[in-house]
Picture 1: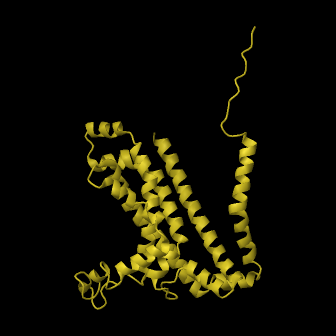
Picture 2: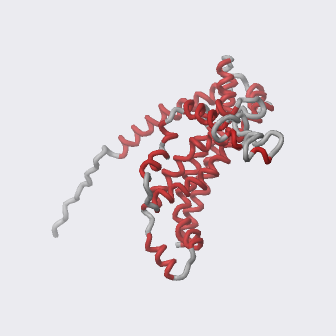
Picture 3: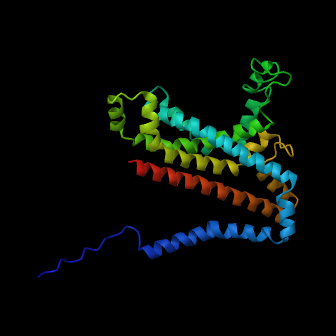
Length: 291
């Protein structure tokens, strides 16, 4: 009886142990050690200092604005990012490549430049802002101040929506491109209307990617600084975001206070992203069970 020779699998990269070790070393140096340093720094002043700094009225107002505006911006991007990805994948029109490349503009554009551009456009004398000014065609219906955009909470949402759109579009786009059209044709042949085809055939396939894009856009918005500070107006208790408050602590050489606010943002962001990822896992599990 002859035994067949064992065929050794040839891997392009080295073995599991070496690649895992390199990955963990890189992750530790770039992510884990800096985050651990922030946690240690935040406790140097003692727990009384931590609580007094983390939960002041000014800090709580900045948390509400940062997380609230980020959530609203991510929801807006989830809707219009899905629509944009659909148009880029399913339709052909002149200038399609130009529009597709413009989606990545917030990736390449410096955030400070984006903030200045948005402020110039959305102020009361800007191209869009003057439409909502008290004397504008839209703002005149909302006396006496119209609908102010820049230097308000609305301006913060606009800036965060601008920087978060590419995450949703680029996450959904490849899934749409690989989507099987045969299921849509089968649903149409069985008499399904457009809404039924989208809600029961297409959207379940897109839901995990949409949740991923939403989570990425939200995470990006929470830590945004450069594009917000110009259009927000930075009014304490009203339009002051937490990253700006952290920067102000550093300007005052209050490193312990800055670390405290950073830890609060870090923990809150981690919990929210964990919930979103859990929702994505549940959605994928529900989809597999339905199949």
